Image (cartoon, rainbow, N blue to C red; front, side, top):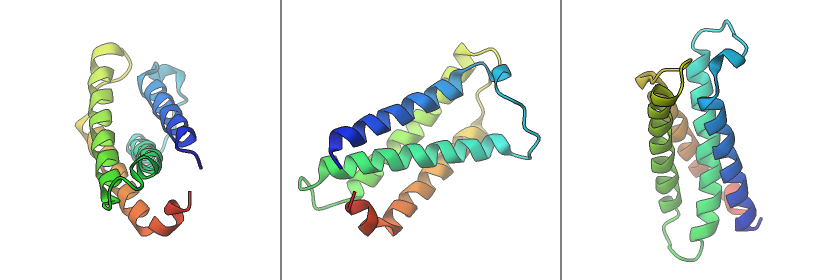
Length: 127
């Protein structure tokens, strides 16, 4: 798959997550499920990190023998992105608040994505 397409996909995922995290939460249907917010944060950052891993692995292919650089860059990007979103929620939204537990959910999702990508390295390398 061309790296430009992977970059476009990663940017689209980033934009959707940004929108969903900064939109007025009163527009989102209430779901009565314990810890659903943390599960959503986990899933968002799992997908976010995987999409950036796919791009960075393609971008760095042939430039380094260390595939793990793509994992590290994507993980760090995901964690900082999650922290930034939490800060922006506290500053710019009235229906959302910054939450350290959300940042933890983000980091756990990013960590799970990295380990999943490592486990499925052969399949990812074919993309």
